[in-house]
Length: 121
Picture (cartoon, rainbow, N blue to C red):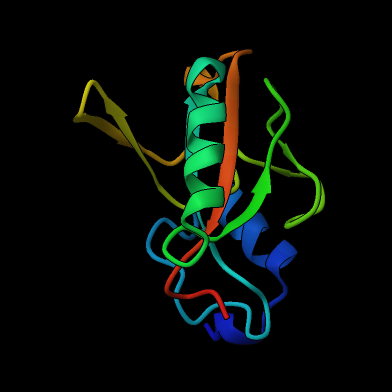
């Protein structure tokens, strides 16, 4: 299947259905791709400040509202907990798991950050 010609909404539908669970390079020609970071609110400001001080190495594309899983700008109503193909969860500096859906881990104090990546253009 040629994912490069698909729209982001079409690809997210396939991701939600579990049909795409790997890396996304080469998909959705002409659209920016991003890395995701989710932090508890108590650390969010410090990370936001880090991105503002390091815009070349950590280009910030979008910041979510506290507790919100809805992507407003980059992906227009995408669910941050279900619409990415794979999530690596880190706790206390160690990877604690890989998931295709993190709904069961979501907390009301989480803030998401979408950051430009090597696939972004």
